[in-house]
Length: 233
Ligand SMILES: N[C@@H](CCC(=O)N[C@@H](CS)C(=O)NCC(=O)O)C(=O)O
Image (cartoon, rainbow, N blue to C red; front, side, top):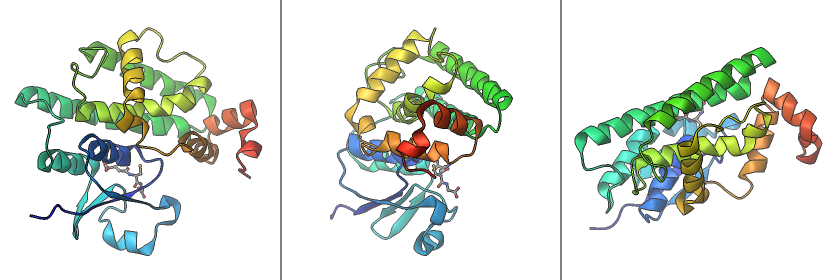
């Protein structure tokens, strides 16, 4: 039987896309990646994507959407398993994947916070979530031991935000979380995680954050005059 042709419709900064990319890379699956501009969605994409969101995976001419569905499918149809063999542990990992999505929503709330009060409030929410994670983490290598799993892929993409935003947080948000700190480092060094974004990711994310018109945007602009350096008007 011929192997299917995989095409991943993506956006260069999207953490949900990165979950799919990491899965494909971990499984050594060939695929084509097509990045689109979400601020100006091409007509073909609007017609194709039922929710108008990335990632979308084309399997030959069949469409899949939602990152969880895409990663679970890829895991199922390719050799190797990025899930625990134990049903309860697998289900728990799926719960923590949902937690990772909630954390992404909080990060979105942080970078869109209009003023200092809202920014500080979101920082506290995120710190509390990180504390929950620290207490849950069973190992300081991967989420639950020595094997990299789908749940790890999710947090590889979550922690990447902090590489850019942590200097603006007015507090060392990972201080007091030694397991998380080590896990974050291990994930950042994992080739599939590191290579899920392009080398100019930091610049692209900084430009994206500057354009939010938020409190964080003003901090970035003030501290580094990044607006001029990065060519943002
Ligand atoms: N629940 C979705 C979330 C995907 C998502 O929010 N994608 C964002 C980019 S990171 C998107 O396509 N946004 C475009 C829009 O909502 O118009 C998943 O897991 O795939």
